Length: 337
Ligand code: TYM
Image (cartoon, rainbow, N blue to C red; front, side, top):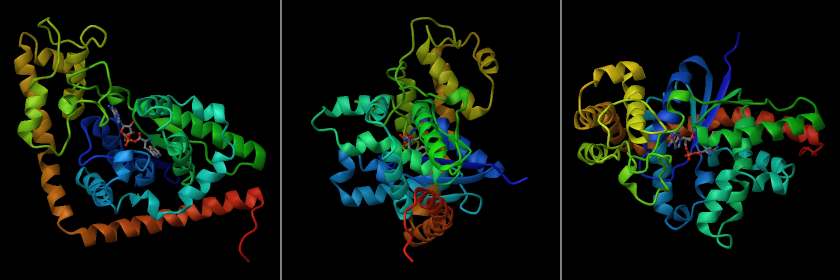
């Protein structure tokens, strides 16, 4: 039986991915390249919706390459999966337009990420790209006939929209698009900010004191973890409602060590928060040390990195161009002779 197809993407909006990106998404990507026919992309076009991406072309370019290198340093192997930069496969924009023509204005307005981000920017300054962002994401997914989309919990609504758009297209034009399912790992679906453990860890947070960048220097991350907000009790116990900070640290600790929550609870029974935080910090820093090393190797040969990405884009395009042709044919678009 042929392998099921997987697609996911990540925005190159910072110099380093954070722990939420890794545990919520990338860790699953690495595992799934062994078991699935996997396509992963650095979604640079999505990142253009951010004004900071538009003001510094050199930084924008560097971040796309750094993002791709980080994915490899974290374990993606271009021999096992198809790794590429979204903008190098033009069919993404082409399918997005077709889907935009089938999306209701109200439907797009209901996307919570759009509502949050446009509110932050202020209605007058929010760009149209922020509004159509989830439709481009739907195109990313359905161009590759993806069965599963490994993402964090915050992306569930976008996958739902993708499914709705795919079903709408299919009901009008026959079974052309594969309807994907979200693949969300319960245990690490939402990693929270260390300073505000009720909010998700995010690169757009106002303060970065609670965000663990995986490429940051060990001493920076040790300090951030040791200063994580907890509670006034003494017990190390998983209770998201009453002990959000400790629960978040337990989630991080167990996700990185492979231990279960109850194993971790007994390991730290009778110990203080200081000991526990020290162990979490040590785990995080040790886990990502080889990634930092591998990163500098990969970034030292940009030409080789670009060659690998070119091969990825070619493999991706071979699939994407077939899907687009199928869609255009179904729509009655006249092919160029
Ligand atoms: P981005 O770059 O914002 O996030 C990348 C991935 O990281 C996950 N994530 C988290 N998971 C758990 N806890 C957190 N605190 C946390 N923060 C981020 C996100 O859920 C995501 O899986 N819109 C997508 C990018 C995209 C995409 C696609 C994804 C564009 N096209 C096609 C899948 C398929 C996003 O949020 O990226």
